[in-house]
Image (spheres, rainbow, N blue to C red):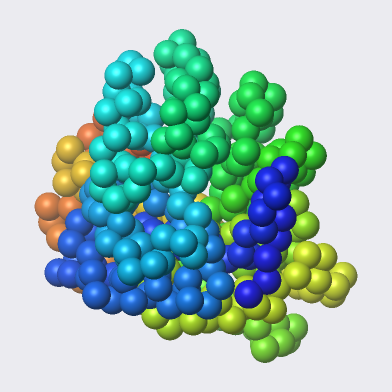
Length: 380
């Protein structure tokens, strides 16, 4: 495993981190983790040099932290540093902060957490947390020994990111970053700024929620065949992130053992500034073609669910993206009617906007669902 310096800490982190948010499940229920398989996957990663795991209060409907707590028994706690996150959208007081931290430590079976992040910061949430003196609270928990280091994950514009970075001596920040999102939210500019301030930069969604690993449409496949070499689409995406020396660790939310094995092997081949000019030009070609074909930036995190009207938002957005990526292939329309029930169709959207309030990508979901209604349901 390759390792990198973790910001200003005297500690090196594995290039690959395990994101405990897309574990194998049972019966298609996000809350029902296939525990034997999930534990085996995480322990394989730790046995092969991964030393950073990331979870959060809502992942797998609250069961991710419990599963991780079980996984870290039998000596595995000593192999890894654990990051989890405050459910900031549920916090109304410092008493809430205390309550959630204690609950999370209990679920994780830990006396302390190595890294505690303020989850999903954006302008309004940050302003509220400042009024609640969250940084004072964080310092107190560090002094009490319940938290070793404080950080934040982020979903907003660069100006907000810079303001938050400058507000405190954070140990780490977590940003969404992949070759389709280089100018999105914090982006490359934020990556470089945070690193220049001594923060470790943890990258989430390096493969855009797996979307950069699926078989691309024919026009993009042609580019892969011409210049892609032996790297898989997933490895190209990961290596693009690792190519940036400012990146400390790239998280992958792995769902199968095959993905774990492939990503561990890919991390073993990683190195800052490894890309040649030809490699960078290749990624630029892929990026332009994806945008031309209609790349929708949904990562299937499912924060938008449940929809009050029952709309299957992530699946519809995935099919909508696939429709344009496949050059408006009518076969995708057939898939829509196979996967989307009458009770979960796009036309049921009442434009309430609750999904957009919860979407960390700040996608115009109502607009996309309106387009999906026109594309998939107009003739019905």
